[in-house]
Length: 453
Image 1: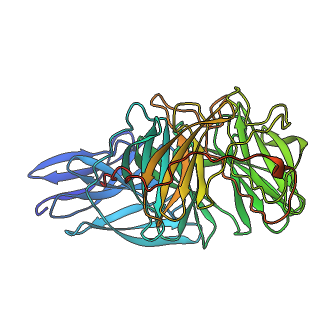
Image 2 (image 1 turned 180 degrees about the vertical axis):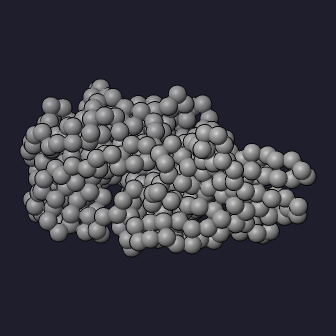
Image 3 (image 1 turned 60 degrees about the horizontal axis):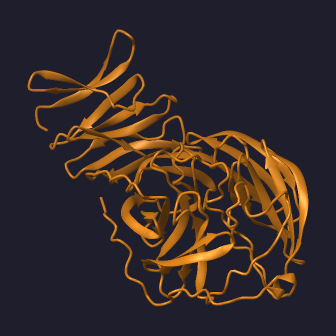
């Protein structure tokens, strides 16, 4: 605004503060997320101010101050210490500045838009589903409870070239944070999501593209959501402990021949088990993981290769199972059949807290169907509506209005990515009887319309 000046002053404690000088009056500008430093660099005719602040981890972030509200300016590709520094803003709301990554410093231009925070999830929400559209990089969150979509909101745009590889509690107790990866550089980053809002972005580290995500779990036994990568050249596994949007440690957990593929991970209590499957024989092997180490391995037998692993959960409703007991398969139960146009979208507490329910999606129409599972039986089905097939499921995550733990004790409702894919063959699984599920295969009504900011 004409006649207004922004800048920096240093107080008696050597802390930097931004200031606005207008009409003969000085106003201090301190971003509420700052710890000791806020600096203002630019202002436009609308009175929008940009600059940067330094947080409690000594990392710099850009900010936009508009209408009395501070908004953090992030560039997802950036890495510490200079994540993003906003230097100026024009009358069209375009912000310029620079950020740093492992290759050096880079300029950026982005457009400032007014953002109205999304309301928190309804009180009866027990699960979140996140979708993203690969054609325009938009993401949305759906609050689910009692097998109903209760609300849906836009989360914002995921930067081009980045893909969602999983959900978890990478920032705090909310398990809906998105782990994303750059398909060109191999860099991993986190979009922290809390109460239906994307709250921050933070780059983690880069790994060669021969290292692929195997899955997520409580590998550290600390209640965190950790990430495991696997080397596609030699079969090595590596665990990355993640807390507060940072990698806190990394551990090698050995190597397994590439004929053994990751079938999924099973979280229960303070332990996460990994199940591998032999792509040639159909054999299943379970590996106990505790304190970032493989502590034991057990054979689970073999199933014909026409049977594919789609996920793990506490389907028996017995506390602490996942569903295996004492590292053994203790029994099997037929669950019925569904047309092959219905694909497993994920597992989560869609009916109620602590449940392991299954969501299917029709590959032809985009329709979603929830299947309640308890005591090893399908107890109910419900339509969740449909969205266009340009929207991809990023994952399901448990939600609690009181704050959910990253891996809840005696619960395996957290999303488990089943990564196995096999064809041909026969085996023990063929003897299972199958019966129709009785699901509604007609086209359901639309999901709740997202409330875009």
